[in-house]
Image 1 (cartoon, rainbow, N blue to C red):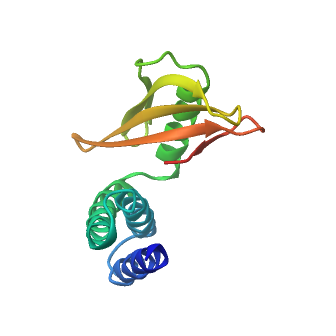
Image 2 (cartoon, one colour):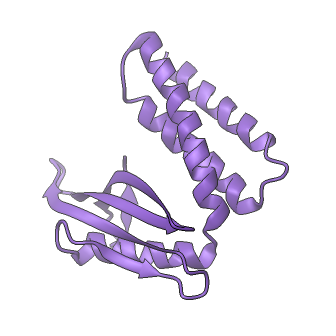
Length: 157
């Protein structure tokens, strides 16, 4: 069943991307990434048919939000956001946002880390909230990232 759900997510994500002739590369990429992340989040909910419905809903919602954010954020915005996220996860105080702003585009956002914890394997992880302001609208995402041996942080959920 899980292989079927993952396959359905992939097909739906590719279908959404194929319908995106009028999208720019950022919006198409955002749509596909959002669809994948939304489907992954949906796969963690429910069992059987309920899980498949959650995967589909998560995929569609992720695609819509990801496409909107991807349409608006350029590579510079993404770099500012990535740097702020790394600072927040590496040394940010729990509950305190680490902000970023691109003076060229006017886009801004922040990452708010939660307390770090250590997994059973000794890896350090932190939950976080990432917020992006685009054209006066606020988009928000939640996740968990774990510190890799090379010092980078990898989003695991």
